[in-house]
Image (tube, rainbow, N blue to C red):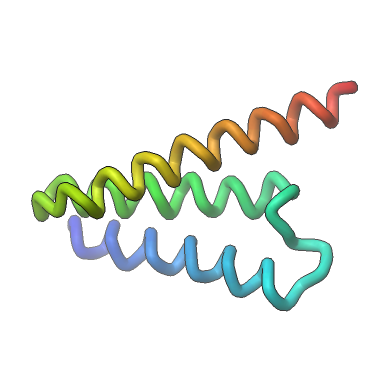
Length: 80
């Protein structure tokens, strides 16, 4: 089960990265990009915790926090 979470998280983060590179309407300032990073980094953080990969866990927790903060900023700007 943890391997599935790890692979799924990797797919979400890589898909967000590739879409950002090749689709002009999909970028770091869209909620879709950040939601994909939230799902991906949360899944990878879970996987890192299970395998006790502490540097990888810290990296993904920070990635998750940044994506959550950015999503909040995007939603706040849309409400104005």
